[in-house]
Length: 470
Image (spheres, rainbow, N blue to C red):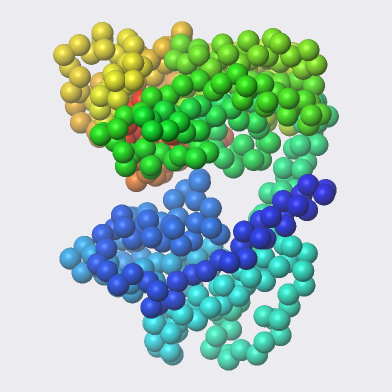
């Protein structure tokens, strides 16, 4: 419980200085759609997490315009008024319906004007977040509830308070869930270790208390640690002028992680790595695992990459949570490897070629490299071309058809969407999968790791499928 208390305190401290820009602080510029979405995400991401779904998409903005919540753009450009509306709407929709938000905006706009209404919203939102920050840290902060407020502002205060308290409730429940999972894991005394190339979503790494071995990204001037001190966006900015290399995690780093796992009280380690056919991570982890005298370790070669490998770690965590025994867990995971597939659509094969990862793809495609290839891993865990199509749309359509073939008549299965600088397309694919596969147990969503970005370049869109019960 003390660990949970400290985590809540740290979260509260992170919110202490939260600030929403007042009207005069918003950029007085004409912005395009992507710039607006990025700006709103930057302002709100400290309190609204968007790992599963983007906070704001182009279709959302267009829908708000059609519904009359937001003024229409001028020649496809947006100004500070549009940004103000979108910040307020994106926040308020966490606790109110769109019709309720529309009525509130109309009332406030008529009563005090859009500028003052927006500033009032920001002021109330910050006060509410400040209150939650203090509550999370164990301090009493009731002043906001004692202050008098004009009747026309009650709805704004109530909505912002509801939003802030919802954040506190969600965070607390999340920590409670982690506590219960950790308790069950310690009962089994099995730790899950993954490498950063498995692309397990961060919220699931935290939920299941997984340990992560980071891969390395190598530029001429510096070596970076995957997902620690470099992001996919930073790599995209330097492409194609600078194409870095990647390397295995060093033995010292892996040994330290094993030592930490032992200190944390675990007796067994399940290590899940990307394919041994694409990386030497599996071999080096297995070598170090064999040197552990006080830990029983099993290293799973997923024969896959990205979320295709991450699927196994996530399912292992769920099975451990259910109390599955160690020997059965290993047996089931090896069966699951054969029932897991991920299909990647790449915008260009340039990066796979330069990174030396293209393997069988080059020999199969030959002179047809200009086609849109769909790439996966074969039974040996090596890249191969599943198919190819002319044009991105046909390529994505064919990918969905491959997923349908894999699913077949399966009773229980999971899906995943992973992207590299293709968030809009990935969001659309997510919606499509939900519509075409309503029976899917879970559909994961995320961005590929910086280490994988190096070998695929921008524009990658992957769809994974994991069959649990045929």
